[in-house]
Image (tube, rainbow, N blue to C red):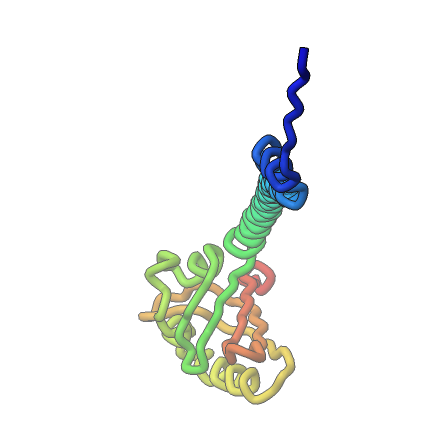
Length: 205
């Protein structure tokens, strides 16, 4: 029995091995590098998405915090405004009681003697309704016998920074009203005469 010996050329053997492995070691390395890079890029994208989500969540929390702080600030400002309004109302009520309903007459006069403001007691002294006396001239309610005395008093008031005083008889159209003691002083900014009048008719009798 004979054994058949087959001789294979080295070149043919190399080609056969090459065909069986389908690629070279260098190509294996390149494929491994590409795969590794692809996986790394995928992980990077995943981390970036996670980081972006964390940043957005942080921004939302900051925005909510700022809105909450601003709301509290508005509530505090509203409370301060409410308290200031209540204080102003109390001050107005106090001013009304002290000025409008004071037992003595209060007048605010321009330099020509016209009345720009007065209280109820002042209107009662002049014998007219309060608001009908606005812009009327106070001199019209001074009796003839007291005109010169009032003119002298009024000139002194506007010529000095000190309080001046005198006694007058109020009356018009031959109708006597009352005898009053008046004091006056000029305010610095507005240049108006603040006049107070006390009915002293009872004291004279």
